[in-house]
Image (cartoon, rainbow, N blue to C red; front, side, top):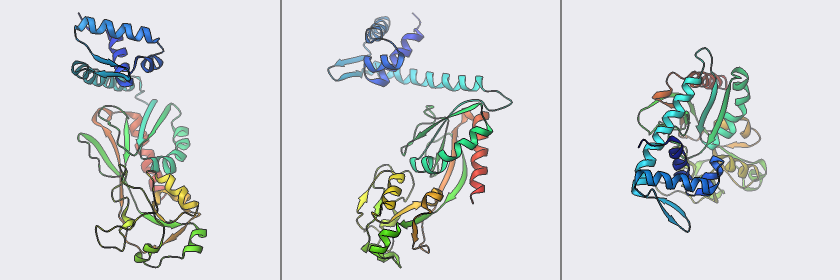
Length: 296
């Protein structure tokens, strides 16, 4: 008996959600309807797909195998649908873009209005995540990464090099004093990203500036968000190194140690081979390159 597409769609939703109830909410079906579809699929395959227990559902080994294939098939179908519905003449349809929370919220989001004015038939879904979404599995159409791509088989283009600024609020520096050299940072409160899947290589370089390698100074605060670090600096909490792509967001702060040698942030535009001929991807890439060139 051939596999029923509707049942596979329900199965995939349950596998991803971990419960009949949550899958039903996603599919707009009742819990009992979802349960019946899964039971019918298990009966047609003559294998159990889920272990049922009080806290929810766990895929059996057979269920894991089926879900891996189903996930790949639905990802390919979504990609094919997007390419088929896209006009050859001009960009149209939904574009799923993923990038880091820092770059996405401070640099990219304010520029989307300009992009959508140029391309009104495109809609953008912006997925901000400091962990990397899987482009091969179509979790997004394209990514803007702050380091060379680690995932193989992706098309990549270097689009920008950013630096860092060490900044503090005027109020904080009035009280704590202005550091004149890297060693002076020992006497200051530092705000760093911490060890939480950092979105940028060498993100906590400030903790070791002016110290022996492997002996970083202790930070006053660790937080896994560059925008939150910015807000903390504005509040007068202490000093932080923030990417210079934050631009106007850094304008009200005071830069210290401007001569300090800092790492570079290499930004890449990345997308899977299947999206090579996508007009939406092409116009978004061209827009980014033009905007980055215009801001220096």
